[in-house]
Image (cartoon, rainbow, N blue to C red):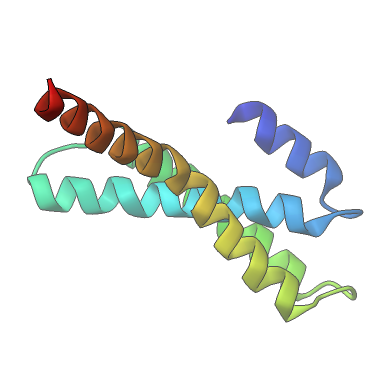
Length: 108
């Protein structure tokens, strides 16, 4: 994730989509950790990092892009959705794996 952030920061002016996608991924990560802490009523590892680092950086990234001369709403929205989908990929993969494992166990 750190390498992704570094790459996104280096490419932010030439390819804002990638930087904004990473910002979206980080923001969504913070939201998930916050939701997990609220739901479980206990600390979720990553909560402090998410709230104190990821949220401000994400807001700054999208705010900076919105104020730039090359701003395009379509890029901001598509980057936000892409970041969320990147973060969701492992959850989808684990769910599919679980379903396939259960089916395999039932067939045996």
